[in-house]
Amino acid sequence: MDHIFKEHIDNQLEVYVDDMVVMSETEAGHVDNLSYIFGVLRRHQLKLNLEKCSFGAKTDNFLGFMLTRRGIEANP
Image (cartoon, rainbow, N blue to C red; front, side, top):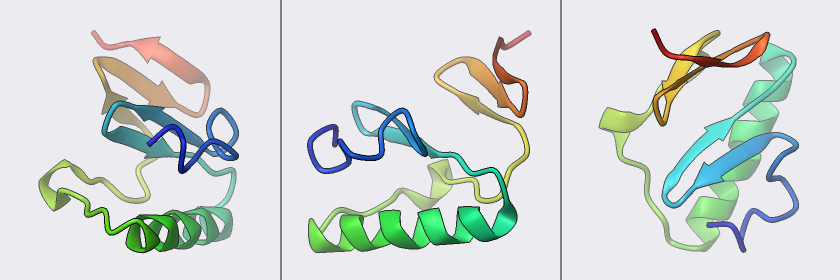
């Protein structure tokens, strides 16, 4: 995962083994980022586990941390 997304990690994407978070400043930017990520996944014949997916979330849990607009916070 690190190799196929190396240009986008730390910018609009965080990857840990087979988990990822797509980040965007705007809703339109999020749609563009997701479209690009889906294309890369398709080209590499990778699939998402829909049970682990959450789209358009303002905050979410990732690897035991809360991701918010303020940044990464401890999950209470």
